[in-house]
Image (cartoon, rainbow, N blue to C red; front, side, top):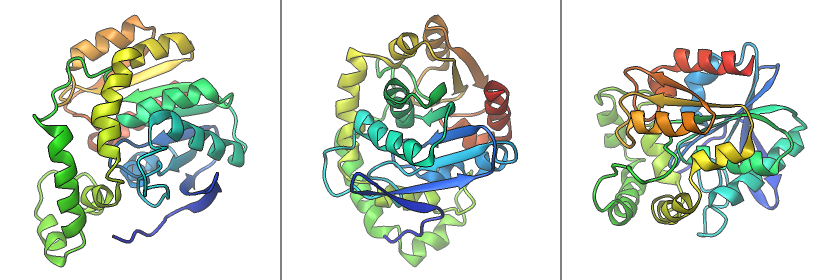
Length: 269
């Protein structure tokens, strides 16, 4: 399914990486999660770009970025190396790095290797899968669903039907399906199988404590994947500041963009 970039395409170690920049001021990097793209932050960026240099990157295997043909190089550490090269190319310093869901793993891995990292924000992500509530059989069913989405996402009848979807959180009602359709199939195993093993060995709250960077965690009270109270307690114990967005789920910046933008602005200041 063809996609049109809304930013620049940078050559990063042989991969064509899609990077979008908005505004001017202190740099703020936004990293999407699994099956996402830079478009997931369209509305959030509106509340940040007046006073910040907002940088958005399509991760490898996502959106308009290359590197989606194979299974290697899609894990969080490999993604972080790619994003570190992007920050080097842009020449930004003291960057606030915000990552949502799988993007939180990438944000932490990036902060561990890049001297350009100044502070961290983790959005909607528990430290590990110890109390995750994913649908049964997700590692098997998700690749099948992804294949189906890739086949139908471009059909006219799907776009017509999308107009009647309830609770659409994107300017384009088909945005989430379009992003899912172009996500590398290998990402399902990276996120649902390999990631579970990696987080069990070294949870994100442990990584937060080890890095000792200023860290804000933003959670949705109604997150359907992770228990908010348990996640709050673990990150607080690791020394992070934790904020809960009432009435929001796993992606609070989509449901409450103005509130999340305010939290980011205050933390950056």
